[in-house]
Length: 569
Image (cartoon, rainbow, N blue to C red; front, top):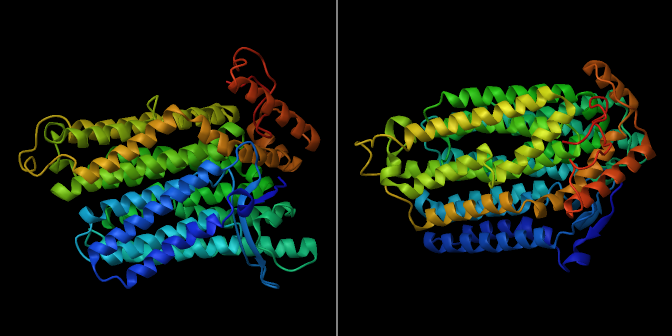
């Protein structure tokens, strides 16, 4: 997985990634000195719009067809410490940038309705949160990523405690901080071990540079230790069962719109697994694939079953998010191209749809208080556009054809089936249960008899709420009906990741083969790359309309040690 770097100066002529990180910082500093809240709101919204335009320009200017790291900016590392300023994006990270900018702009757009006190400081905290998340997605230095990961806790704490809606919001904030600090401490240990190993292997100083660490071999026994240090750190953030207990507290007690939108919409935990764990620890990723698959399957079913009995929309969405992260975890650790694409695409899809549902929960709460079934009923009669907004976003989460969730779920199921049919069954069960809890809530809360106690308060969407609903709806149908441009941006990087997993070592493949009881042919270095190239040519032939995958039998790449050679679905 040796990657080349294309600098930002070569591509666009200016340091676009640095601007994306520090523009929100400049805005929040400016807001410190602006006392007029209306002016502060305009400055915040204007700056967020500029950030959004830059983020979409980045995605548009991104070169498809290559796994190279792009828009790279580097100032070198500090001698002896190995920490450096190194930014870049590839197919794994590029789509998270516009999603983060979009959600920030929508949160600020809605702030005038949702924030009734001290809006200036709310904007400062929101922009600080955006800056830290942008920094995490753009960092190619492990310690730099870790620093942004930890700095995110500062604005998050103030958003929960200052603008939370529950009486136990301070307790929820402390629970969040404790979980995140524990996870980040374990993550830091894993990163330091990677740097120390690189120092011993190369005979030089420490390095935390992701690009350099890709070329360093990590002993198998050490890979397992580092793998679980990093996994726990990222699983807490995701969250993955059983490290999810902070999530319902924060989403129920914290701000309805704002922090909750970012927690559900920005998938930093599972991104970290895909960005760092799998490429830097490929042998451990193969060896412990079955553990990840089991945790993913349990998260899917557990989260969905608990969501099914919730009467409060905010708690329902919290457990739905746990279930969705189980889908992503299961899909990523199939370690085949379809599973990797499905997992990454679903991170984007669940981010947009999950954030959209929390916006709807916010719309409802601003009218009648907590979005509980006891206060709902017959909403379709009094607020038809609000009803349509909820239904469209919920159907996208379920995976209705034409919405963004459909193609992602299709890829997840294919990738899971290539590993084992039981994984595909677990993923399919999640889809069925997702339909059950969302449609059950929709039927009871939005259809049926009108609740006379709240009917007079249940007004339809206001202008800015309508803008938010239309923007999110446009994203849902854009990705659903024109998925190819999104997949084209991620595919080369994920193919390189798949190739690295295939070369990860015979011992890991052998252990998986013994555990699964399914035979598979050994694949070695050059042979693996030759077969990957053959499959890539075939895929391109199919996508250009030259044939169909069902029309000819193609011998394809199995997931190491688990899948038999078989025809692609």
